[in-house]
Length: 241
Image (tube, rainbow, N blue to C red; front, side, top):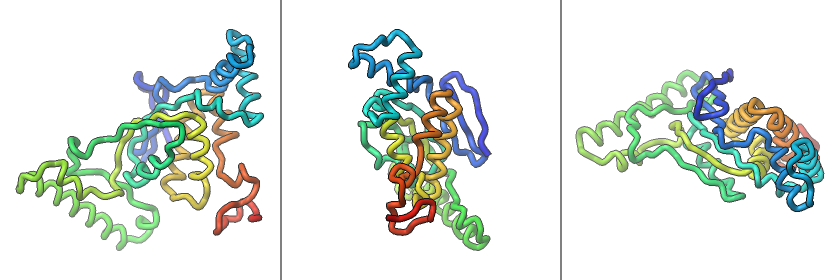
């Protein structure tokens, strides 16, 4: 279940009942296709004062495969409530010189940290009890190390698991984000990453009409781009060559 929140610091906040939230910051352009057309118009000697022409020019660029113009569109957002594991994977997509800030494990009190429970574990009662027990033990140990033994919080934080939730402020260009979607919307991608990409698509699609067009036409798994499955173990969505 996804819901929308309005906040003066952001144009749009898309939240889930499980606590995960995507916040599209106001620095993200509302009309990315028009912006791309305006930038391309400078090189073409076009009229960049005409918004409609800029839009048509931007659309022509991306349909024709001239995707460098996408690098002029930056997306700034807050990713909140996703696991440290999936955020670590997020960092591996470094094309286009993205930048980000992550919640500190040095200063924030994680004595009662929140965490993600994978669906495969939730389905089995005994497995879920074991999983929760381990998480509670870690939280208790962090607290004990700091309060009873005087261990600095930054050192006690070494116990924190990849399953704990975290928050980052992220900035990257549209081309990088679209290329990431090809890999991470694939059925072979980890379930939480597919969920994260879906949430980002939802948030951007609600942001404006131009963003909705982009998410519907360009945020697709790699088999849609290649026309066939490139994975060794195919899900069957596209035929293998």
